Amino acid sequence: MELVGISDVVAYWRVKMAASMKIPIYCSMPERAEEMRRGGIEISGFLDDLLRQVDVVVDCAPAKIGIKSKATYEGAIRALTGLERDWAKSVDATDRSLGVVRALY
Image (tube, rainbow, N blue to C red):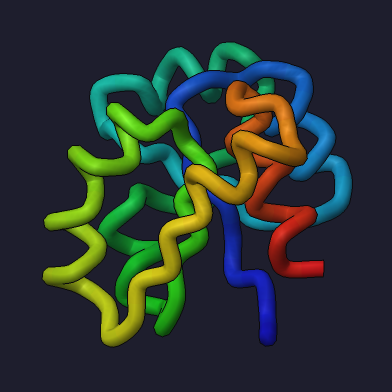
């Protein structure tokens, strides 16, 4: 399995850590892109760009956010892996971006 990138809406330390590891960062909401850039994140594209490159999505967002994203994922990819409940047991639920990195390594 290859990690293609992660997607988020903020430039907080977990996203910056992933960027420092040369993991491509995608912005989930175009209206938040400028804020991420101002926060020092080089954006590789938007969520739609990322979804065109993948077969599987691991969504580590809190459940209320993840369920809203499900329709977007199903329309763009062939497989959907939802790990929200499993990750809530072992990883801080706010650890969205780094959770994706851990899940795939």
